[in-house]
Every structure is written in structure tokens, then in C-alpha cells.
Image 1 (cartoon, rainbow, N blue to C red):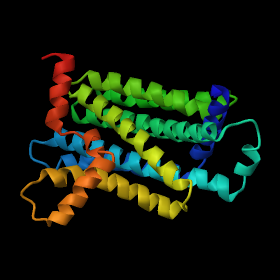
Image 2 (image 1 turned 90 degrees about the vertical axis):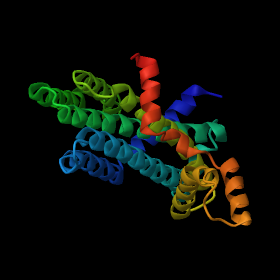
Image 3 (image 1 turned 90 degrees about the horizontal axis):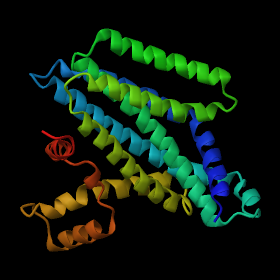
Length: 279
């Protein structure tokens, strides 16, 4: 196994993914949804912070799943449809190396997406918590300026965004740490979102190897939906289901990944954060 070959495929996959305008559209729409949570929070009664954090984290989770399914169902199929795969495989590269490269490229793209959305969520949370207006305005301005400078001086612009996304997440985390918010809970949610994407991307690539993008997206979404619901339905003893249906759900709960583990309840995350961060 050659790490250099895997890295080359992953880098090329990442470059192909970030050029897709659909991904940019999803990012803009997701950012608008996060901004909308500030307006929706004003409609709640003494639960503004909870609305901002819960709706924001739910939006990041949902949109990261959409990105993972979209990229996983389309990128490998494009290689087969355009027959570029037949040019690559005769070269000294194993098939598993090619698939690993595709996988890591998609995961890297999703990680960048989650980092950018996480930075926006932290800034929105800081605004709701009453952070310094100067700080909330200055940090995004400096980050945007740094991104522009990076695009101007870098020879490979596609590598600027991953580095910038990590810096942006770190800066937004610092801004959020200046106010009284559940910072560890927010960070834990982002890590769990990435874990969910890791599994979902592998599932999408599996289906993409023998199916069309539409069917791959449908199959992967079905696996995700069952993984979110099957375990809860099995645990609900009072639900009215036939014995056959309960057997099917129990079987699905054993076979399908339990994606519900990546979206634990708010109280669970708060308890874990308290254990890690102290009282």
C-alpha cells in the first residue's frame, strides 16, 4: 500500500468536490439557516440560547449528511461514467488504494464543511450570548481578509480552504469562549457529526460502486434513516407493532449502523462536558 498514491487520489477527489457548485449552494443555504436561528430565537420564551444551539447543531448534522450522501453517490460514478477510471486502474495502483483515496477525499471535504459551519455556529452562539460587538465583527473580517490573501499568494488555492477552515473554527471557538456557553457540548457535537459522516461516506461509496447516483442516494439515505430510527423503535416496548415487524426492526437494528449514537441528547452531552471540563 502506497500512502503517496492514496494521498494523490484523495487530493484530486477533494479538488473535484470543491469545484462543484451544488456544494457551494448547500454551504450558503446552511449558513442562511444558521443566521435564521437568531430570528427564531426571539420568538421563544426565555429559551433563546437553547433554540440557537439546538437548531444550529441540528442543521449542521443534517447538511453534513446531505453533503456526504451527495459526494459519495456522485464522485465515484462520475469516474466510471466518464471512463477516467479505466485510465487510472491500469497504472500501478491497487483498487483498494483508489477507493481509499476517494473515501478520504470525500471525508476531507465533509470535514472542511463541518469546520466552516461550526465556526459560523460558534459566532452565532456568541452573538446570542452577548459577546463583544467589536470582537464578533473584527474576527470574521480578519478571517475573510486572510482567506483573500491566501487565494492571492497561494499556488494551489484548493489547499487554502482546509487550512483556513481550521483557523476559522479556532478563532470562532475563542470568541465563543469569552461568553458563558456550553462550549464543550458544541465541540463534541461537531466531532460526533464527523464520526457520522465517516460511516455514511463508506456506505455511499459501497452503493456507488454498483448503482446510479439516484439509487445510491436513496439507498444511503434509507440506511441513515433506519439507523436513526430502528433502535429507538425497538426500544419502545409500548408501540403497537406486529411480532413480524418487531422481528424485522430488531434485525435491522443489529445490521444497520446505529447513527442515533452520534446525536445524543442534550443532557447526555452536558453531563459528558461537565465530567471533562469540571464543575
